[in-house]
Structures are given as C-alpha cells and as structure tokens.
Image (cartoon, rainbow, N blue to C red):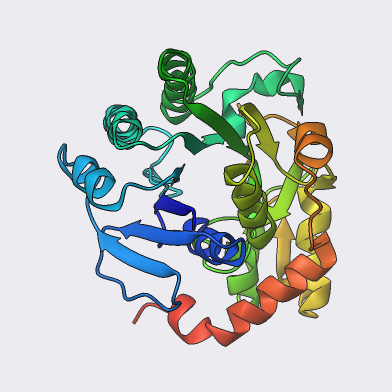
Length: 308
C-alpha cells in the first residue's frame, strides 16, 4: 500500500484531504500540532511542530512515506499575508522535502496560491500568465516553488505545485468570505459587505481536496490551478446566500470599502486540472453553498456564538 504524509491535516483544506486520500487507497499519516486520534483504519495521526528543525526528519525516518502532501502554513485570514513566519515556512518546507526525499520519498505536492500571479491581468494560466507576487505570503510561496523545482531536478523528485484559488465550505475560518456572511445572516445580523463588483473563482473545499488527492496520485508536475474556472461576481454570490436564507434585506452592499489594490478579476485557467488530471468538480456553486449553509446551521452553536 502506498503511504502519504500530509501536513496541515487538521486545517480547513487538510481535513478534507485526509478523507480524499483514504478513499484513493493511501495509508494516510496525518500531521497536526495537536493530539488527534485516527477516525479511520487507514489514518494514523502524528503530533509535530514542523517549524522545529528535527520534527520532519523524525517523521520521515519513522514513516518512510512514498508520497508527501504539504499544506501546513500560517493561514489566519487577518494576518497571513504579512506574517513574519512566512519565511520560517519556506525554510521548514525545504527541510521537510529534503528529509522526505532522503527517506526514499519520490512524489511531493505542495499548496501554492493564486496570489502568485500578476493580479492585474485577471486570467491566470500556468503557462501564459506572468508571476508577480503581491504580498509577503505570495512571495514566499513563489520562492519555495522555484527552490523545489531546482532541487527536484537534482534528485529526480516529482513535484506538483497546486495553486489554490478561492475555497469555501465546511471548517473554513468564520472570518473568511462567504462564511462571515452566512454566519451573520444565520444570526439575524446585518451583513456589511463591499459593493461586490469584483469577480472571483470559487471552489468547494471538498472538490479541492479531491483534486489534491488526484494530483498526489498522479505524475503531473509543475504548477496546476486548483479552481472551478467559473467566474462569479461577489455581489451575486452574496445575494444568492441572502435568498437561500430568506434574509436578503440584511445584506448591506457598499457598507465596506474594497482594498484599493484588490483586482477586479481573478479567474483560473483549469485546462491542466480538467484535461491532464481528469478532474471534474462534484459541487456547482448552488449545491456547494447549500451544503455549506447546512453545515453552518449544524455547527452554529460553536461557530457563531455571540461574544458575551
């Protein structure tokens, strides 16, 4: 049986990837900073802080996985773009991949970001769109990709670089969009939003996890956009949520200002994902939002509890 070491396994994307990799027949070794118990026969949890120099070496030597899915990073919505530990994650990621390779591993997939692209161009193609990172986070991701691509050529390592676009769904941070809007409307509160004229590319996190699992289980190398390829105006998505919850009057468009550097369009070219990898999303936007809203209803007590 093939084995995969997945970092960031208890995070928003990672917990969905654990299930997707298990379904593909992998023996999954899931890494988290916190103690976790396996909830499936094919999942073994490991507690480790990968920013500590010896943690990755210990895991690689003990497990000797055939595959690595590296998702761990600082991702808090209010601080990840400028977090100083982005540099620490570059160092830790290089160290982890080297230790994995030295232990016999040969296939690595790492989470990149759509923010690596030149945002002023709107349409993001892996082969045609220039890269122009617009934040410390994106610069570090881009630098890591370049370093790993160079290293891979020296040691015959297969590296896939998954550029994630706008993801939503169960376990997303409640401060992220559209989770914040869903939570406020479920509580009967006013949802203050921007005008929402910007266009984005949204993909349900379960579909993103399936795409990542497929990428791990393939030999496709280089950058691959993980997205829907479907343009959605933020305003229309917000209004759709309002209609689903019958609380459209609580949405105040234009109450917030857009960041001056926010691009009007971010849309992925998904031909590598769909044609070369063979991926087809399970959720359309309507079904994906319905699924997310139901999950939020079920978890409302813990997710959207008002501050006392």
